[in-house]
Length: 281
Image (cartoon, rainbow, N blue to C red; front, side):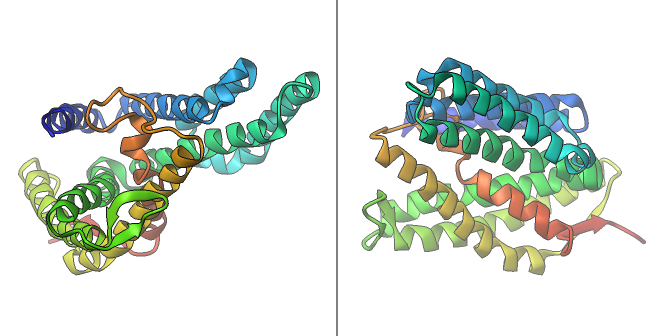
């Protein structure tokens, strides 16, 4: 527990530093670095890292994506993915006798899923600007991490009915419900504090608290889906944690697995259902 708390505090300090530089290329670098570590952990956990050439291609692709704007991605996605597919299949043709095609498929999936999911935080900044971009980033990460934290403590206190015993034995129905309630309450608090802070700095926003409250249960659900999906991979490949970079939590994937599902959902919803807007007198 002590290690978990210390790691969380260090993580929050790093997150604060990144948010302070949110409107700079530092955010792109941070997302690229997280993507690199997450893809490496998945490749290592699934045995794909044994083929260094395909792994390096996957990691290069994962690092490259966060530096493309949403407009560049939309315009050049077919071309980018085409070149990538050609490259990995050239490797497969040369090494087909010792490189199973399923390893290629896993490497391809990981290197697309991770950077594109995490890069939605960058797209939120590019779409909404710094003030609202940070707000949506907090909703994305808060929806994932607050649900996880609330589920952990609610599960310890009230957990009796297993949620998915064959995938993640420690998760309970009571924990999931408690996590959703915890996330909703504290996300409203975070949104309120952020609105006060942004107003004090001269960038007032109006938060749609009812809309945010109604959205939070959905974010909690997809957060659980992301968490369980990552757990399935670990279970099938007999891995306890994806890494040890965060004592008490595991690896980068152990911390960001739920955010991979939540951030893209927040991005899509924000296009049609604003959760906040600049304050207009």
